[in-house]
Image 1 (cartoon, one colour):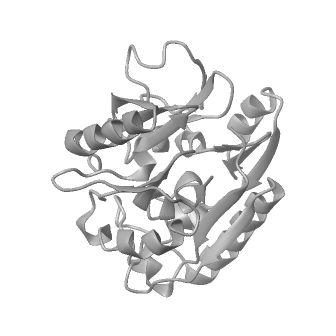
Image 2 (tube, rainbow, N blue to C red):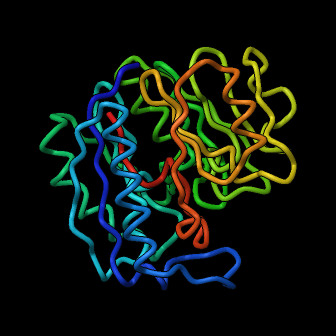
Length: 254
């Protein structure tokens, strides 16, 4: 599915207080800004028109805009983040999405759902059941998808923050996945590129039109992706990785 636009949010200085599973490292703000600028440039190289939103200092994690909405060809669905500190971010993205989508749906409590758990392939969404997305949120999403003649199914997520932290669709019938990201019996009809055990962070790529964006610094995975035949664009997001950020979560693409 061809995409033409992207929405990103500039990181604020408060990003140094962003959520982190390790809690051991803090991103350097100047490097964060530089890497975000390069990320936007990579999106533009993929042919996307990028809308850059201003930073919101009150929300340290708000640069990870993908988590607060799921965009389909028919509607935008506002999420209910499983991280309580991120729930107020949803209201900040709504007026932006209303500029582009006449149909807006909303996940309601007790459902929780974050965009990082949604892998959309054509008219089907694979929904990761994780610490951030529960069954109620997943079922609400499935019901919305049915309304627009789309489908959805759930996938258990173990050992990863989100579904797309460990497995991503990169076009055709090809997935790229970290070890242990795909439960047995799931995605049987796909070919899977398994990233080397010492490069698990390389799995979070983005397929955009005829190109693949991948995180920089993973030479073994780069060799594997070179065989796919798409142009590869490497982007350094090492500062974002310190607070569990990846390529996919830094933008909403449609």
